[in-house]
Length: 293
Image (cartoon, rainbow, N blue to C red):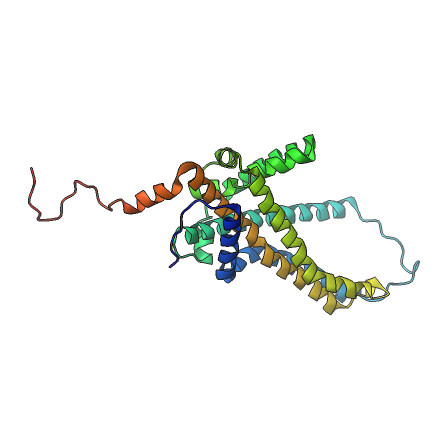
């Protein structure tokens, strides 16, 4: 079982522990993060299969051989409605995965065993809170970007640990956002650097797994004749890249949440005192023990 190491950490130490956790428990975090990206992969594969089965991956019919078909309003509204439902489901899955990763990091940070099943189990009953946090964060960050780009970035940093606060402290959505705003005060720069590093890593990993297939696709003189196998490899590369990079930011922000609590609230001492408290009240007597009265 991991041993809790509760102490103030520098930004470098937070990142070092982030990558150590990621490497040491790779399959745990990859298993948690795969859910929403697997959904996208399945939809992409189904779409490609239908398109190629219907001849969409073959040669185009000569222009003018088929009359133009104007989609009906009902058809377009159905497409739009389906797309909207997919986006909502996808965002909720992302939030659930984010919360499950927070619980897994918390268990490991506090020296407890962690598992994929237990991480998702602890999210049950908290989905509405997650949705509320997501909506509030989007409104706050959106308002910042409307003002100017810089305030939007600052606001995003200030609400970066709202999900850990909501999940680990049982706060409501609004209270969790306020808690994040309080904890991240004077640490905006460090949180921004974490986000920047994660963004750069995402770009690099995506490039490694997707650029080769893009060059292969570009070498084909007729893009509409992209082979089905190459399309599958593109989707698979995107899925692998997302699963590989997805957990890193959440791990880092979860550790930063605890680091801020240690720095500002002496959480390490609180946890130590709680672990030393006896399981029974001090005045309780063992059965058969003589009374001291």
